Every structure is written in C-alpha cells, then in structure tokens.
Image 1 (cartoon, protein in one colour):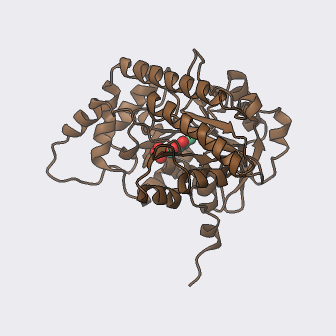
Image 2 (cartoon, rainbow, N blue to C red):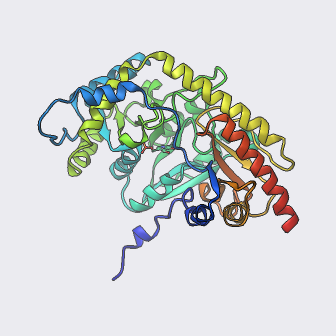
Image 3 (cartoon, protein in one colour):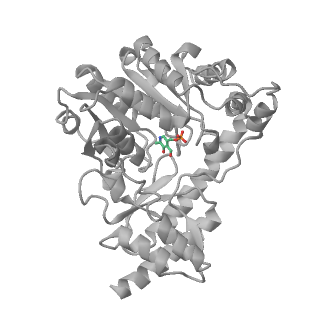
Length: 397
Ligand SMILES: Cc1ncc(COP(=O)(O)O)c(C=O)c1O
C-alpha cells in the first residue's frame, strides 16, 4: 500500500535521529549526557499541581474546544500583565505550541503555498509545513552575526504570489537569538507591505538574558489583523508534558477558522488545563530564579566551549540553546561516533547535529546544537567529554 507523498516529506526529527546510537551506548552501560533536547530539568511550579487538585468533578469530560474558561481568563490576565490586551475570545487553547503551529499553517495556507522562515530554524516548522503541503523558503542567518536578521531585501526577494506568511521563533530555537525592536519592526513592515501573515513563536519569551528586552508581535497595532502569536506553557513553566499551548490573534476570521480545527480534535486535556490556569499564581521569584539559573548555565557552557581549540560560537541572548561550530567536517558522523565508539570514564554526550536545522544543503554540516537544560556541573562535565572526544576523533581521522 502506498502512503501519501505529503507524509513522505515529513522528516524524522533530527534531534532524535541519533537515538539508535544512544541505545548502543546505553546497552554498553555508558552514561549519556543529553545535550540534544529542550526538555528542561527545572521543577514545574507547585501552582500547576494545586490547579489540578482544584478539579473536583466526578466525570472527566471533554473541555470546550477553544479551552477551559478558567484557563482562557488566566491567559488573558497573563498578557494583561505584559501590557497586551487579549480577550479570552482571541485566544484558542491548543495541545502545545506544536498544534498551534499546525492549525495556523492549515488556516493561512493552501496546499502549494509557501512560508518564509529564517534558517537555522526549529525543525518542526519544516515537518509541520510538509504535513500541510506547504513549501518552506528560507533566508540564512549567520553564526558570526549571532543569527540576527539580514537586510530586508534578502527576505523580500523570496516572496512569490504564493507566499502567505513569515514565521520565526523569538527568542530563537536553535539559535538563541533575541531580535531587536528594529528587527521585529522590519518583519512587521514586510508583512504589511506584502500582505502576509506574520507568525511569531514566542514560547521562550521569558528566557531573555543580559537586560535585553523581548519585542512581541503583539506590540504592533498596525498589523494586528495579520499578527499571529504562538505560545505555550511547556518552556515557560517547565511543563512540556502538560501539552498546553495557544494561538492568539486580533483577527476574528482567523480565530474562527482555528476554532473549527479545535473542534475537529474535540478538546485539549481537561486536567492539564486546570493546572495551567493556576500557573498565573506562580510567584514572580520563580521567573527570576529560573532566569538566573539559565543565565549561569549559558555563561558556564559558553566559557567552556570557547576554550576548546577549533570550536566557534556566539553567546546566546535567549532561549536555552547554542549553536557551535566544531573542528570536524561532518558533525553528524562525529556525534554518532561519540555515542557508538567513544566514552570517557564510561560517559559520553548526545548532541544534535545542526544540518537538520537548515534547508540550504551543506549548511550546518560542521555545527551542533547544544541545549543547556542540564545543571551547570553536568554541563561542565559534558563539555569536558566533548573536548576529549574531539581530540580522540582528530587522531582517528
Ligand atoms: C520554537 C519552539 N516552538 C514551539 C515548540 C513546541 O513546544 P510545545 O508543543 O511543547 O508547546 C518548541 C519546542 O521545543 C519550540 O522550540
């Protein structure tokens, strides 16, 4: 039996691609430090679990398709605290930011349309687009510029009559970039000038370091009919397993279409929405503590990485990822080797080869993405293993 050509274009996650090799290491009894995934080790705030406890019904019913009232109000209040005026009706609860992206692309694109995204990008953008029959066009951002945006013309030259949207994550996964006000203003200007939607994925909004300020797409009144926000509690509250995200928009027609898709999958999980609703009561100190912790980890990781001969990287400004160039030709081959053939005192590291974060062939071949979701001691140990592995690997080749 044949499967669809559309589904064949969906790629396996490059972040998990090396899992079979990790299995080899595990079977040999080798301990693996996972620098490859964005699963934070920070504790989920207790407020989430208190919220779940508040649920006293005898039947665990479907929730409203657009989300539990209590959660919609809680999200609306969260945005109000950030000075963004979003009514409950302008928010649609989804199963994580992932479903929010899927529904958004289905709502704004037809099969054969295209969207423009900066590369390197969050790999699921490409897979979700492929699943929707949407082509991805990319403009390249560079490590040496901290992955900030290129000139406007490098973006606008990609626009065709079938281009429907510009999409990006800010702060960036996998780049750690935080776009300046000028950059977001430029993107908003392009969206207006070329009549495009602008899809801003802000799931890492709280993870911005060094007194930098995050610029949200919600700040731009003049594009409120075309601005779509993707958001999630996964990273903000270290609650990836709750699967609670959202789309937010001031465009009633768009919201109406998203509601239809929310209805076709019936509802998001009820209990988790009760937990998520109570996250609004998380004390502000939680964010201060978490931000300080990530800033510390980023600094430790960066300082350790740049000590390694041949490794090049820029200090990330946000999120919890760093892209590093390694002194190897093929970072994927090296990453596989670290798992299958190498260990230091019976320990090794798993990283994400960066090629899969680019659309342009051969870009990222000598780069890896490291996530700093591990505490700093484990990070220091991991980077020491990486350094030794690079030395061993160079002798071998
Ligand atoms: C940039 C970005 N957007 C969206 C998501 C989706 O997260 P979730 O579906 O858990 O909300 C992720 C997850 O890693 C991400 O990195």
